[in-house]
Image 1 (cartoon, rainbow, N blue to C red):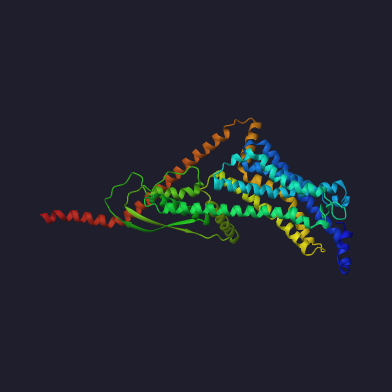
Image 2: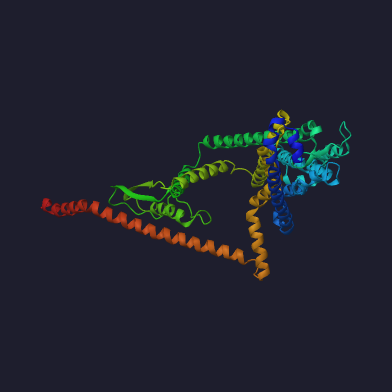
Length: 485
């Protein structure tokens, strides 16, 4: 809306105070609006290029992001027009086109979010194959673009009571004019929030289903009387050393050495608790502690060594707090570890997409409620918030697309670069195998060295503790013949 119209709708005692600030407010709003729209256009184009260039990125969740990105591109173009549509006049083709694009494309994004939520529901509750959804892509387009198209076209052809077009000045861009502001609720915000609420209910139901299944699996494993105790013990030892490595440096101290038998035989076979080295999990430093315990368990039961693990707390409070947040997030993610990776990937992408839609539409909805309660008051903070978050839909989709596909994208880019350099295709695989082989030998060497060090320490302690009993045995042997004579 032009500045003169804004001041004329305000009470007379506030006209002089508000009028000088409105032009600068409009300029700032338009600046943020176009900046966000430009970032979204770059993000959407990056999605299109990556999806077309790399075949591994053409997964089902990414395909639905591509479908939604078409709407983001149209909405971003409307945002780039910005205040120019208002300046051109409500009857101009530019203003009418901008309003039509807002009504159609802005509303399509929540519909795509709801479609992905329905897909998640079908996957978890009806065991649907995610790949089968792409066979009905035309149905998704018909719903997600067809339903918003109906009110968008009707409002384009309709006129209000005065004969003026419904599309017109909406303060910071062209959309449904203030003379027909009631239509904004019924043709725009009501369908959007229906999609958001239904999507949220679906994700709550899926979360309840996942945790219920997880608890059933846990109860089943705990109720099994033939559970492998050694596996549980080894798992506990691994978690112990892993947690110690996260918390700080582990200080190992020998607390007690007890002699059991002076003539025990050495046991050369490995104990049941010993597990093979894990080649592909965890850094070398984390594995060495566990390997030493495995090596020590294969020695003879000449002496029993009790080892205490202590961890020094980190002195940096900020890092400790961030570490706690990361551990809590990792623990929450581990609750989904038993799920099918395909289902988990689809759930993750769809859920993050729904969260981005919720964040996008909350400030704009609050602004709309404010306009209903106080129709004659211009709220600069709420209009600025709407102008910032609404054009960023394409940017959010780009962040979701590349964050969930980052590993595959990096591998594909590296393969393309190697192909341009003439590097053989299997070289990276060979280097990975060679790295894991060298890592295994390094782990084995450290385990052997630490095992030898442990045996030597136990031998020294045992020799010192048994020296007295050996002297007594020799003395008894010398005195026995004299008693016989």
